[in-house]
Length: 295
Image (cartoon, rainbow, N blue to C red; front, side, top):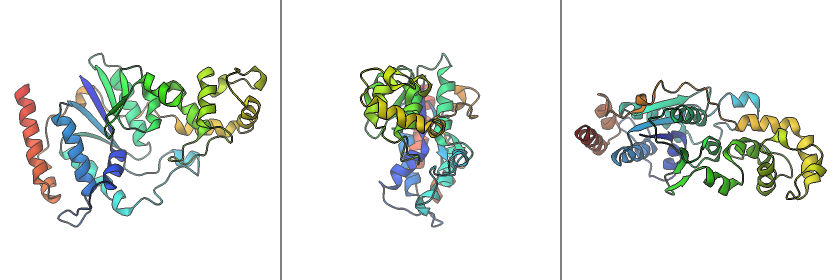
């Protein structure tokens, strides 16, 4: 079997800015929700059997306690934030496993689920459906990969190295020095993507980098300036790496069979009526019928 793990937060943001606004019967904005449901259903219609979706039920997480500058919900449109609980409830009604994150982030749930699914010998491949660079740290060979569904591209371990210049296990160190504007931490002064790739391809983790710049590999240019900048900001670099490191201990599922799609719940029809989406109900019903015929 293949396991598809979907970044619900990314999908909701993407559809919010891509599809027209639409209100349900109670006036609640649900345009992006409908877009995500349709997108997930299309995966099921094309044969996805084991599916899990992670969402940021609230944007803030434990990382905000570690670093005050970490990303918050400030500036996120209210009409977008209000659709998260609607999406979570609608996906569950459609029969899809959902992990709404409050203390952790959606990325942590995806990382935990990927790690757990990969340990099951029945799983052929784990596909983490998001282009988010944070999740590149979870890629393992060709077994755990990233799928960018919008661009229809697959990123395996060789793809991570080709894009970032470092192996997946070095991605947190890479982000620590380069920074991540999406998550709100700046990285280390003077370190760009090229310097980070050259250095971390030689020394996979920050602790492996020699403190004496004269011991650095000759392929790294401006070693003296980079070393001074890194070790003068050493504590910040370790903090940023901690922020970039995804957790693998989030409770997600007991066995991969928990992720098998078995069709919608009884309340899905009511959900579709409230979203004015009876066409979605028809498609889900047909997908269930075909799935059981195949069995």
